Image 1: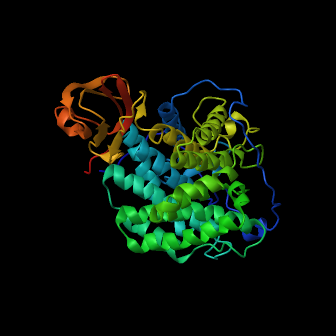
Image 2: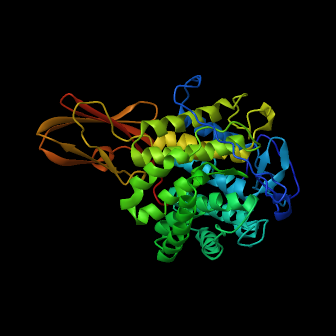
Image 3: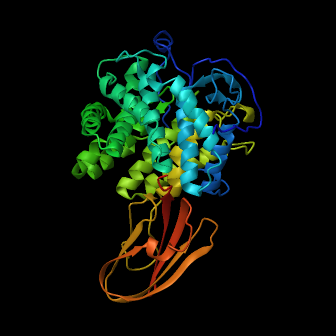
Length: 468
């Protein structure tokens, strides 16, 4: 049965392709190269009011529905408009990003309210596939198609994992194949392409490798490692490239991409490499036409460094950048403009999607699981988290001890409270399905508490949608 789209308004715009926006080879030659690198010291900014990351993520998801083309007779039906003041710019990258946001909202909350929006967005992507975007396939100037294909993989992985629907897997394979056969040239371009190609390839190699893992395709993984090896050498020639900012991209994409590709294959080198090169990442963006986009990518790089090194310094850099993006929502409608100087009615869909994926979701899911408040570490691990269904919680006792366990939903309601009795020393596991089989557990985020004597461990568990 065909779903009916419900939106606050219905506006027919002809299919004018250009997003983020694409810069042609001719225009690129006119762009002046400049660094916008500023150093932020934690504590040097005025703290903003606190906010709930899940609420802000939901605001992002809700705002972008207002920019989706809902007229089923339009050639651009389902596509995502660029911004509140750019209604005639509609393109696939914005739309792929939105599929990820709406799908992930379901994963986090269990609410499927955006399913019609997702269906419409896929309709647009099938009509305007990522590998047919502007810029052709030239290995020096073809950055925009590569960028789009990377977003297509991100969208498909999230959608398929959450909904268990494989109908778009062929499209994703086409995008992965495009990335394999069209790696951007890194070492010889000049001008605009000297910067943008490496920044785009960071996003490409990370997504290609993870897609290869997702579909168990050794060719995709091997090609991603091959390209990532070249990208790693590109960075090491001049580490300042990690704070290069060009077009909509920033060096944070390279840090994330290498950690999620090359260093998955060679983990022994990971911590030393990140410790050496993370100091070159942007910590603040002082100006430019893509100011908030660059902040989002920088935040992605900083949070990646924080996760690898367990560093509170990089976590502070990340939180500052995320806070600054949230502060740009001057009219509290969930949308974010591309730069500080823009008025509140200049919010843009893609920057809003960046905030959701690169900042709010990482505050929710990647903040330290097992927030231990004790003299002795319970060494808590979540097995298969996020998980399709219910994950297991693993923890270690240094000596036999009585253990109590509690499990809460997002509203703080306790779903499970159990006295596990005395448990022996060593590794222990809690299989949540043993405790919650009598409950109908919806997809979403949950919280647990483990008590062992005077020791307390808290953390998050994300339960994804069961396959249909």
